[in-house]
Length: 91
Length: 417
Image 1 (tube, chains in turn brown, purple):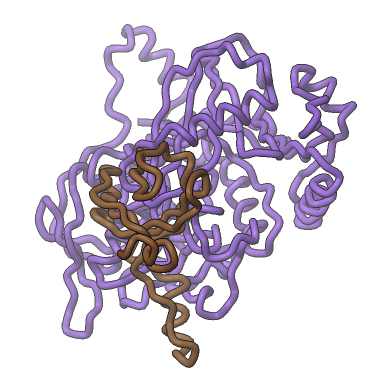
Image 2 (cartoon, each protein chain N blue to C red):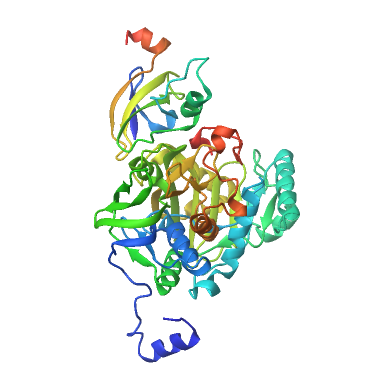
């Protein structure tokens, strides 16, 4: 598996660290216990195309949002994750 | 068919031409008292314990492929009970005790070999942590010995004791730990369960659940038709989330790929199971002579049953740091299995929120050693609707209650467990 970093180009997997599914959103501070439990512990554990967060620690140190198929490891899209990196490229 | 020295002699005299299949490849009936989804070690063990221990013999085990084609046939065959946290300590020792009598119980040679499991330590802090775990084990009646470097130099003179960064200072040894022949464990449970009337149904993929008006599970829909069931238990490892989703459940589980490796055969070298404490590398030697080893999971969600090169490199570096002389041994085979990584690194054996559906999941990459224990406690749960005392803490709602059993202390990040 190789990931095409939007800032650094195509790099080998060893440069990247995985966080996980990009879908869960941190609940509001006053959200109930149930919402926090859902966010921290429950996962869709998608078998198929999933959007996920990777960190390019061995390169530009930016967080990336990678669209990848968990059944085949095929990567269909890589974009900067929301935040400073995305702002830089106007994403 | 009962196996003994006499059956072996009889078969030998007739040129080994009259061996019968060791278990019955059954066709599905309309209805069973209990249906177990998943024909791996855990599913087959559950069926055998239901039949032998709890008198429930109208049982089917449904397997999508062939029995033992998942993680039961993809592990590094290690058995041990060297855990430190309440919940784990007792459960894995229950399992260890069942390993010790499994072959007599099943009338099947599973090649259980108590050749010892040795965890190496490389710093004073790690020694203290291991001493504490060893003491926990001994208080619970489990064998553990803390060995110093002098003892290890006699046992394993080829280790890289004087590595500048990670010197081998000693190790925690559980002599009763060891290895078992993974395929024979599957076949042994299939053999013994089949003898007691359990139907083992292969090429039968579960595609959904049938439910009554109250939502109770009344059976399963499969690629071989509908099958009614009084109760349904799922023991499907890496596919846990997919099967649970058919019942509308989300689990605190991610599926990750774990690789394992076998080298070409070499002369006897590694006497037992050995783990490198400064990285993640565990190794034993098979009876055929191959070094069987593994390390970390790849670290990203996967259902692909194959891994990538960075982890392979990392595992081999761990091996080289510990045993420099294996550098010229060639790798023979490598494969991947899909692990049901739970959010605290500990399994879930519990009733689901849906009436009639029972969950056995979240084994992370420690499922093989748990096979007999998992079968017993899951059968207990299904038969009596109540947790076995050694599995009473493996509850599905423990994450909500804050009662996690996090042996590594990593938190809800499954790729770190």
